Amino acid sequence: MIKLKRVYDPVSSDDGKRLLVERLWPRGLTKEKAQIALWSKEIAPSEVLRKWYGHIPERWTRFRRRYLKELEENRAVVEGLLGAIADKMKVTFVYAARDTGRNSAVVLKEFLEKK
Image 1 (cartoon, rainbow, N blue to C red):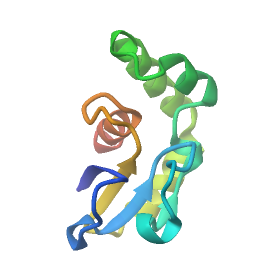
Image 2 (cartoon, rainbow, N blue to C red; image 1 turned 60 degrees about the vertical axis):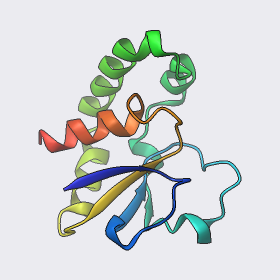
Image 3 (tube, rainbow, N blue to C red; image 1 turned 180 degrees about the horizontal axis):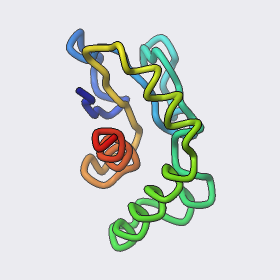
């Protein structure tokens, strides 16, 4: 089971293995405070796609579609992430976005749960 959580929210024992699924390290957060087990930069949207989206709600549908395409085309990275979480009972993807419903972690979770 994959959970989602903002990286700025308090760490909980219920989080299990915490994986940062962002291309950039979250501003103002130390590695000690974030308690990240794995930082998977390469699974995040490409720099071009991330900048284009800019968390503009009107672009969400197109961003989602484009990011899913990137994931389909990046099989090796997806397989590597699946291998890293396969034996874990609890996994939490942490992300920096303020919008909890429209961010790349939401799309990634949906993509992986269909695999």
